[in-house]
Amino acid sequence: MKNSTRWLGLDVHAETIAVAVAERDGAVRSLGTIPNRFESIRKLVKKVGPPGELKACYEAGPTGYVVYWQLTQLSVACEVVAPTLVPSKPGERVKTDRLDAEKLARCYRSGDLTAVWVPDDAHEALRDLVRAREAAKKDQLRARHRLSKFLLRRGIRAPEKMRPWSERHLKWVKGLRFEQSAHEATRIDYIGEVDHALDRIVRLEKAIDEAVEKAPDKMRAVIAALQGLRGIGKMTAVTVVSELGELSRFEHPTQLMGYSGVVSREHSSGSKIQRGAITKTGNAHLRRVIVESSWAYQHRPSLYRELRRRQEGLDEEVKAIAWKAQHRLNSRYRKLVARGKSSALAVTAVARELLGFIWAIGTHVERKYRVEARKAA
Image 1 (cartoon, helix red, strand yellow):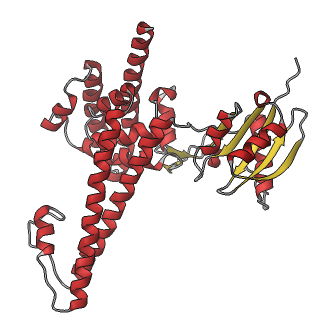
Image 2: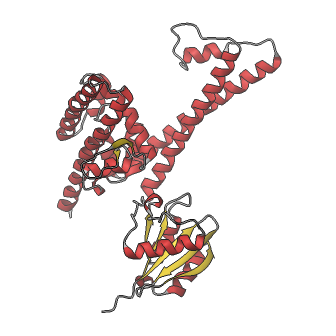
Image 3: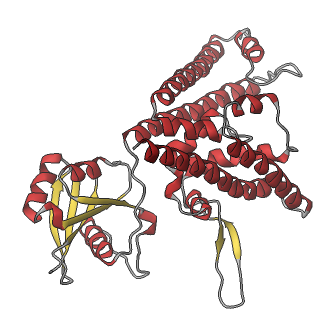
C-alpha cells in the first residue's frame, strides 16, 4: 500500500503561523502564512488533506501547547519539538518564517527532530501555578534587596544576632523613622512591596496545596514519596512532578540527568577526552530546585524529626531508597571535597546522582499504581 503521509512544519507565532509541507516524493513547499486561530487551522487541515494522512510539528515556545491541542482535536498527529535540537547548517545566514517552516517539515520527514513531553491538563495547570510561585519568590528577593540596600545607603544596620527577614527583623524595619519626608516615603513603599510579595507567596502556596489535593491519586502518591528524600520538601516535590510528569517516561535515569542539564559537556576525539562544565541545556526550573536540595547532603546521614514526619506512611522500599541516597550522596560529596573540588562543584555532582534516586522512587510508585490498575481491571 502506498504511503500517503504528508509532514507539516509549522513556525508558530502569537498572531501567525507559517506553514510548509513535505511530500513523500521529496518535495518541500511553503503553503504561506495563516492567522493563529482555530478556524484558520481547521481550514488548513481541510485543504491539505485527510487528517489521518497528516503529521504536524512545531517548536516549543511561548505559545505553549494550544496549537497541539487544536490539531489533536482535528485528529491530526502532532508533536512539539525541542528548538535547541533542530539541526542547523554552519553556512546558514538567512532566517525567515518560511524557511523555518520548510526546515521543520524536511527534518520531521527525515526523523531528525526530538519531541518534547506535552503535559496533560492537570500537569500543565499545576506547573503554571508552581512557576507563578517561583516568580513571586524572585519578586520577593528583589523587593528585599531594594529595601536592604536603601537602609545600607543610609548607614543603618540591623542589630547583631538578628536573623535577616525574620518577624523580629521586619518589626525592627517597620519601626524605623526618617526625618526627611522623601526617605520616609521610600521606606514605606519598599516595606509595602516586601509585604505584598509575602502575601502573594502565601496565597500561591495555599493554592498549590489545594491543587495537589485535587490532583490524580498517582500524582499525589509520587509527590508524597519524593518527600521521603532528604532536602526535598513539598514545594520541591511538586515542582519536580509538575515539570517532569511521569518519571517512567524516562527509560533510564541517565536520560533524566541529561534532560535536567546537569551532565558534563564533552568534546572527545580518539584517545583525547575533554569534559567541561554542565550543559545547562535542559529544564532550568528542575535544575534549580535539584541543586538547592543537594546542599542537604553535605551533612551526615540522619533521620531528623521533619524527615521522619514526611516518611510516615510511605512504602518501605521508598524509605530504603531514601536512606541509601543519604549514605551514597554524602559520601560522594565528602570525597569530592577531599580531592580539592569546590563545594559548588561537589553539590552539582551530587545533584546529578540525586536525580537517579528521584527516578527510582518515582518509577517504583508509578509501577505500583499500574499493577494495581491491572488487577482492578
